[in-house]
Length: 82
Image (cartoon, rainbow, N blue to C red; front, side, top):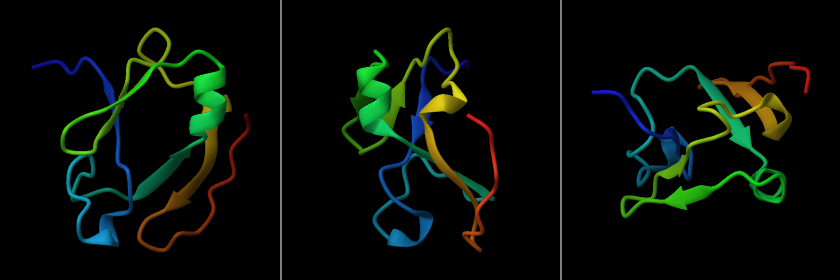
């Protein structure tokens, strides 16, 4: 089954409540700049189970909308170019 949306979690894997949108084997966190994404015309939706969904642009979330990228669980910053 192909997914129609890119999935983001509304919190961290350690938050306890957050289970939807986070895979158990996650090792990188990508923080989305929601304000910038919305201003850029990206459509975002929140599902009933608090997963943030987007179609991105042609199925891709451009890196210019990343706020930061970190390792998980260490939370070490991962450098990236916007």
